[in-house]
Amino acid sequence: MLDQFNDSYITTIGSKVTKKEVTLADPDKTTEMTMMVWDIIGQRGYKYSQSITFQNMHGALLVTDLTRKETLNGLRSYWIPLLLKMTGPIPMIFLGNKADLKNECQIGLKELQEVAATCVSFGAQDVCYLTSAKTGDNVEEAFLNVANLSRISRPKISMNMPWNLMDPKKVTSLKEVVDHILADFSEQYGGIENATPVIKHQMDLAGLNLTSPSEVAVMNFIERLTKIEVCFKSQTEVENNRMMRLKLFGYKDRQ
Image (cartoon, rainbow, N blue to C red; front, side, top):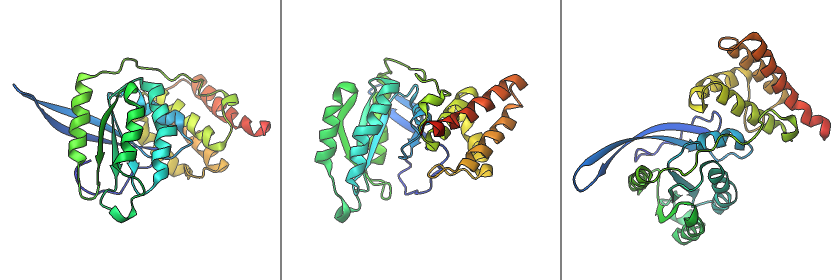
């Protein structure tokens, strides 16, 4: 993001937030733009909490790993449909990252362009970049492009979460239990940006690992969120939230 290599991520609820400053040059003036960049880490199974980060987005950089062909397939089958469901058509630019690893690349510019072409009617641009987070190649250009497109093109819709997050019938796994709890708490806490630091701390204390959550850790996490909510909700609301979260474990009875 800053034209330099950084492989450290905050794996909280599948996202990393970065502020990016860009300067856009017009014929008669320059415009300073501050972009809030939500870097969605590619872990499936958390579509509800991931969807919250897509609300009110003005543009997207869709990144695939050139050394792993399956990441382009995942972009096409999972991430793009999830994004469009929440935002409607918005400017989208496709990036093929790790271009510096030429001998390891499994896909190239042609494959990126083919996927981009299928999304043009949904706001995608026929602009694709081969980038390197290590060398910085084309990183700044990509950000400038999506920034410029985003300021002149606003989302046609701004959807609210279309699901009943706390409906036990919608849950089929322990990952989905965690996903529903994360999304619901974030919405009640004033949005995912406000909730993320709290969630991260409580997950660490509960020993909750998103890749392989255990039932004990999830139970601990629920109890810790309950203690947090005591500070800003009534006792009745706190207890209702706790009981609804515990009821999500009912998916086990249907298996």
